[in-house]
Length: 218
Image 1 (tube, one colour):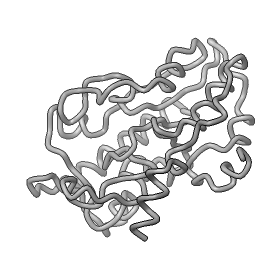
Image 2 (cartoon, rainbow, N blue to C red; image 1 turned 90 degrees about the horizontal axis):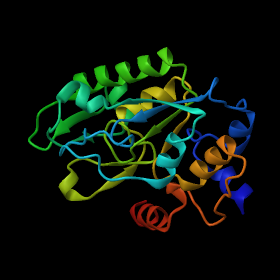
Image 3 (tube, rainbow, N blue to C red; image 1 turned 30 degrees about the vertical axis):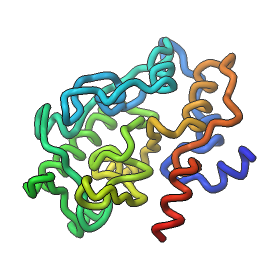
Image 4 (cartoon, rainbow, N blue to C red; image 1 turned 135 degrees about the horizontal axis):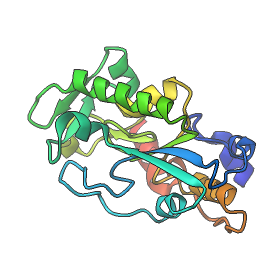
């Protein structure tokens, strides 16, 4: 079953082979991870919260052989608290290519500044030579598996990446979300060989909600 799941995993996720090929990380030579500020626990969500805690990311960050660089691209450009924003007309890749826009709930156009935020996130990934980005899914900036399709109040979703995640992917970085439990367990096992992987863990695209929702909307 695990090999079947790995075969259908999106290319932006690190595969089991990718993870096994990483070096053995130590306190002196740690795994370097770029993390969405909110996933790292910073109070930088649009509403001034961190959106809660996620157990597997928290356990990974606590490892002595991990070095975390946290960054909130939306806070860097728009401050906290701020309006909600979402992508209209496509995904983050379309925004980067000029085919879609990032608009707030009140209609303000944040496209250019979101692209600036994405470039700042890419710069931090390069400066810190990160092995991986662990980002908040569904965000117009950091989503990697699912993002909103237009106005959030419509509760319409689409497969795809936010603007910042898309730029990282386009530049060869692997991106995992806080909801990709199977991949996070595999990463934790790489960092701690005593860690027991939950055989029932699945990534976001394998969850029942994802399969049902996108089966019904395609």
